[in-house]
Image (cartoon, rainbow, N blue to C red):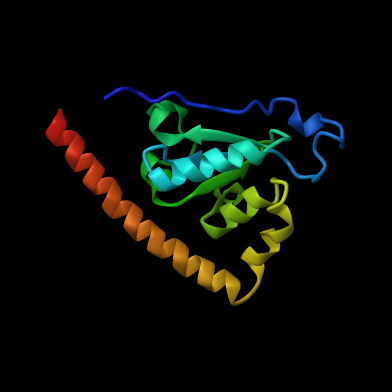
Length: 156
């Protein structure tokens, strides 16, 4: 199986960028995602198109060697739930990560059009519904990943 290319958007100068290029006043974000997931792939493609300020660095989990994984995280951790972390974070604490629904809220806060609705992820009632929907998606994703891996084994 061919190793997928990692596609990252450059955010090296983003924390020091003038307010005009980062109008939202937030740190750039690193997002780990599963390129093998068709839903994730489409969603990331959409987010990349609307991230006009380059505030999000997308890291494809399957393209990482074990030594490139974030310290304190395993591939299973990253594939098990959606993880993000501010790119300017110098600490390696697990408290720096936003996981699941909080990760989506962090992404939305950095994107035009969606940033105005990011508060919904923290609104009681709506947050619980979104969490339930996300848990349902995770169940589907695990079954789908297991099926893809079984097919890949048969083909190799």
